Image 1 (spheres, rainbow, N blue to C red):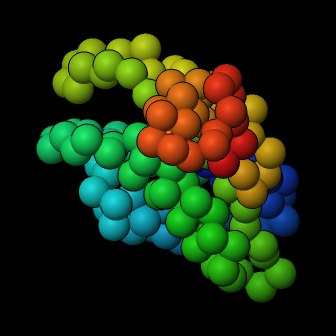
Image 2 (cartoon, helix red, strand yellow):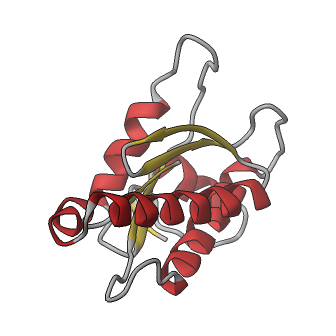
Length: 149
């Protein structure tokens, strides 16, 4: 899962550097809290974004579902944050499933969730077809192909 803050570049022109750092820290801390709540692992902070893995270091049968639930929880939590006067935050989140090697090598999914995130509208999450298909198989009605969750 890759989650980034919408409009951070524009926001940086309105805020002084210390305020911008506080806003980014609040965004990343809020995201990390939700990731940990659903047993995900923050793999890396990238700019204003957060890269997270589900299924590492401990795998669960429902890791893809946990990632989707985390994305929705992050969107809700970010919407409630008021890190600075006049600042309203939104997130864009991409989710992808597949084999990932953790260590010095990162598998194909790393690039894919960042791409799926670009497909998400502000305040939304986009799930790749593997996750959408898996949710449909569980009796949920997500469309095959990229899905807005």
